[in-house]
Length: 324
Ligand SMILES: C[S@@+](CC[C@H](N)C(=O)[O-])C[C@H]1O[C@@H](n2cnc3c(N)ncnc32)[C@H](O)[C@@H]1O
Image 1 (cartoon, protein in one colour):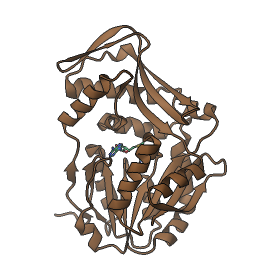
Image 2 (image 1 turned 135 degrees about the vertical axis):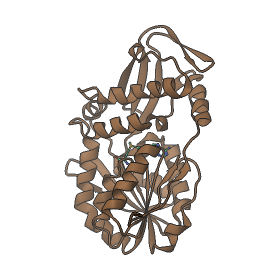
Image 3 (image 1 turned 180 degrees about the vertical axis):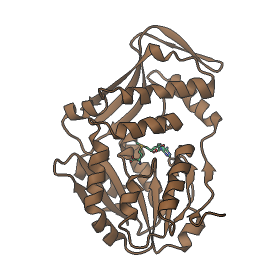
C-alpha cells in the first residue's frame, strides 16, 4: 500500500566524489593545510555529531532547543498560516519539530542537507509524524546555488528559512554574509529567516564544549581522515593524528585542527603529502557573535533584524530576521 504522507522523492545534488577529491587535494596542498568541514558528514560523521549534541559539555544544542520551545508561539505568530519552511543543514530534523508542532497549518518543509543518508531517514520519520505536511528533501551543498521545488511554492502563503545549530558559525563573517545574501535571493522578498547563533563568551566554557571528556568530538574530527581513506584511497594513520580545538579570542572563533604526531607522508590516491611533527590540518571554525554584531552582518546581507531571543545565561541566540 502506498504511504499516506506527502513525501516527495529526494532531489539529489550531493557533491560528487570528484568534487570531494578536488577539495581535499586543494586543501592539503596549502601552506596551512585545510579540509572543508562540510565533508565531516558521511553517515558516521552525522551519527557522531548527534552524539556530540547530547554531551554534557556541549551546551549549544540543549540551550537552542530550550529557546525554541519558549519562543515557538512567538515564531508561529510572526510566520502566520501555511508557511513553507526551508531548513539549511537539517541534520536529524529534531529542532524543526519544535516549530512544526506550533505553526499554524505548516504547508511545506524543504530540508536541505549534504548528508544524504541522514536526510532521507529524517525526512521519512517527519513525514510519518506530520502526514499533512508536504516534504521535499534536497541533498545539496547550500553554499552552491539551487532553487526550491515549485511544488512547495503553490501550497504556501509565506516562506521562512531556518538555520539552527550555529552552523552559520562555520563560515567566516564574509562567507556568512555571502550565504545570507544567497539565502535571501532563494527565499524571496518578505521571507523570514530564523538563525541560531552561538554567542561570544568566556573561553573556558567554549574550550570545554569542543574538548569533551568522552572524546566524541575528537572521533568526529578524526572521522574525516577515515572518510578520505575509504572514499579517496587515502593512507592516513588515524593513530598518528590527534584532535585539537581551542578558542581563538582575537578572531572570536573555535578552531578545530588535526595535529600530526610525527613526521610522516600520507597518500591520497596518487598524490603524496608530507607532514612535520606538530603540523596541523585546520578542519573547522566556529565563529561566535555578540547579538548586535550578528544583526549588523545580517542587515548588510539584506535581512532586517526583527527579534533576538536568548536564554537566561545569554549563551545562545535565536535571531528572527526578515528579507527586506
Ligand atoms: C552542525 S550540524 C547541525 C545539525 C542540525 N541543524 C542541528 O542544529 O543540530 C550541520 C548540519 O549541516 C549539514 N551541512 C554542513 N555543511 C553543509 C553544506 N555545505 N551544505 C548542506 N548541508 C551542510 C551537515 O550535514 C549537518 O547535518
